[in-house]
Image (cartoon, rainbow over all chains, first blue to last red; front, side, top):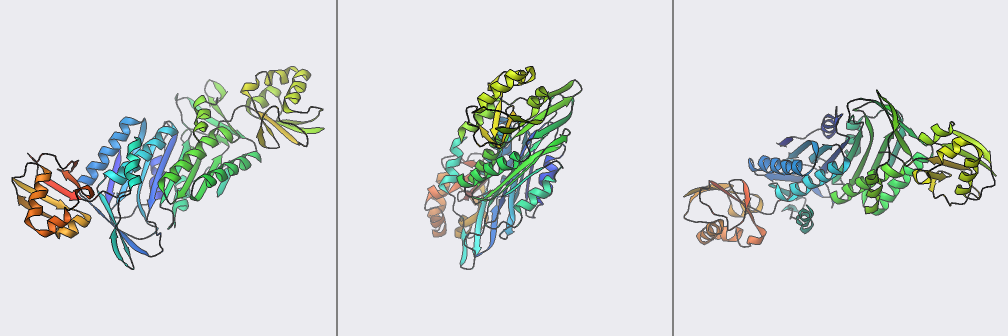
Length: 146
Length: 146
Length: 83
Length: 83
């Protein structure tokens, strides 16, 4: 299990390739990448605040829970904090498993829990000012399926 | 939509990075990679036969169906045929969408249909001989959920 | 009617060729299968269990009762194992 | 009892500090919230709607009725928006 919380950017392609490389026992690798989206066309930057200490602890607990629920051969979570601009990658998860259903389910579970249970808060800075992103009902509801 | 059927290997990291690069409108990118798994420890190579002409047509139809079902900003499918050894990548899919639920669902749908509806046949060559991989009931059943 | 037949995986191995051109009066895929099976033992062996077989007409998956009128290429193969 | 309090996102902005150390006799998180809200308007503003607030005790998510006995650090923040 590899959990990284960092301010710096990461190389998605290199991380994905390294995660998948040399797996002769796992037939399935799933990755998810979250990108800063510029919906209105006026997003200048996104600021992600987090809770140092608790963040790593919460993500590690979420990844550990995934490992007990599905037969996984590997889990990677990278999540950034600080400032980033549209098009930049915010975070990624990767899962490896013998069977694709396990790899997919674990990746979706990780995402649902990271969205609502890991201590990150997004703030959007546009030409018109700054606003904290509100949690969505659908993100909270997504936890209900696990 | 980018569909490639090829005998040569592909660079998963480079393909994943290129697919995700520069997406300011899509917040979510999901990839799936299938790797030749050596369960018994005696697999020498895997041979994948396909139906030239129909293969591209079938995959393009499956990807088109995914694009009508979910709000996607991009779909990539690469599937190899020919000989490959344990640890080599057989295929990948990638999906991009504004919302992660769409990207995940489309990637799973593509995988379920590629497994059972794209004209590929796997043969495993071990020290003890060669055998065609049998289709599984669970792969056929997976189509029922869509 | 002249048809191009193509075979894949163990169907190809049992019949012994990857493809062939045949003249047939069969109206459906099932009639074509019966005609071939009556012709030689290797076809009968390959087509013995239709539930283990799939077919495509002009590169589209089809049922065994699919009509052959206007068809140019018919393929026989086991259930697919891609991905 | 001495507690380290930490605040995030708009809770931090409304209270005006990222963290502080307080002496309190509160037995639960809810009692601590009531105590702080009575102290100054900026706390009352930040804690006005508990349904829009989450808390953690010693870096574990907790309910507002969680006991504070033995706790060292309490955090207040809005619902999380990671991923």
